[in-house]
Image (spheres, rainbow, N blue to C red):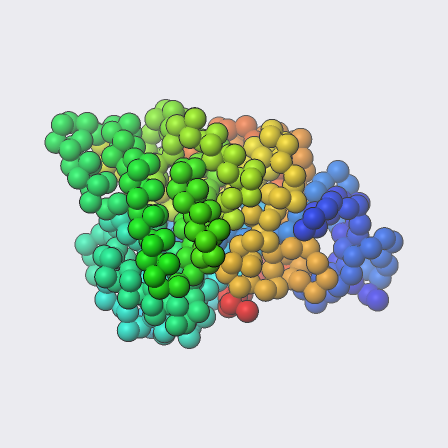
Length: 453
């Protein structure tokens, strides 16, 4: 058989083992795996590298259309490609209009055409006023729905809004009917908002005051409340960016009781600490906030036990002036990190190289499990018949991340100046090289829209 590409000499990471085998790629698919594959003049030598399934980043905000000045499909997906992500799921915010019905889904899909360097799927949104239109998003091909039980959004037309418990309940009933998953940002809105008011009124506006206004118990309470609503309705649930072990333990209890529920966390909750973020300032502000070193270690234990289903970047970019404030008022600074370019190298370094985690386990949470949860049936693992979404990573090759290496529209990230102990060398999307460490981004924007299979 002739192949378009053959990858040789690498350590291929399969679902349950690492093997030194060759991969033959034909028509964008993995066509063969074995030894001494012939029939291609296009050979990729992966000597000294891991050959990984492409990362699926299931929590990305690319802000287009409407806020492309923050980040757009072109720059955002170049960053994803450079970081080893081959498919992402775009959140229904922070673009304008938010993706909350059939018309706005079509607006986003039209704006995405010809601009993506990796494949993409869409989230729809659950908002206070779109219960009767949720089916339109399902028909448009969204793979899940997102809502906030914490306060969100600006007071501008078309922006995303948080929901109350009534809409949460009614939305879950409808999404159960549609056999869709609801993903929830969980923090108690009243507690967090009032604690923020207390801090501001007391003249406390620094990073510590911001973090203190969003305590762990506010996250855990919201998770428990949402789980109860899920139990009543039978809706499939996914908890996004949980930051603490106690919240994850509540999800594990629900799983043991038979609920259909999954959980994600993010590299910044594992690779950074509260103390780091106080030093970094606005560039490290996010919600929920990064927790203390002791809490971070508890989160690592949850990951090692397999209690965290997936890891995502929660890439939430903005212009630099939104990360700065002349009065150092962290309550006015944008609450999101630019982080999607470093989800793989940070986690491979921290989990595999520093803590001895099996690379197969890491790629389950970065690729295989996201594909299963969001119904991306042709993606997520290296197997015959799957899309040839493949990353070559060189271990034990430290570098210091500089802002000029970032592909984002705005070159800021909490990981700038951090030493990372491995490097992404090549990224292939459906067999096409879209990133090479020496050449940079390669070829046209070939990313395609992927629907739930």
